[in-house]
Length: 54
Picture 1 (tube, rainbow, N blue to C red):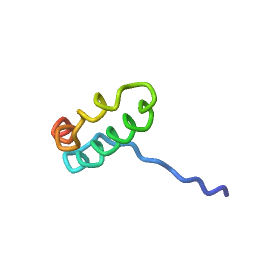
Picture 2: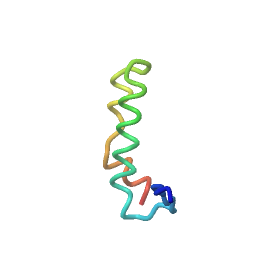
Picture 3: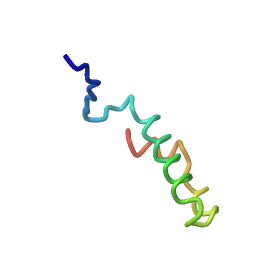
Picture 4: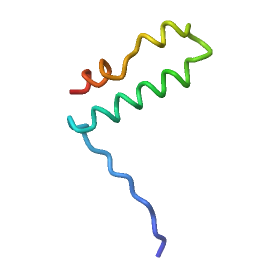
């Protein structure tokens, strides 16, 4: 029998807000760092992003 790792996808809950904000910040600062001005990227603040997911 083949052992497979399974991924469960569930709706986000309020306790996920910190990790979602961190993910958002990391994606924007990594993927767009050479495409968008640094000042634009720096306007995103972790606490403000976190509040979007609460």
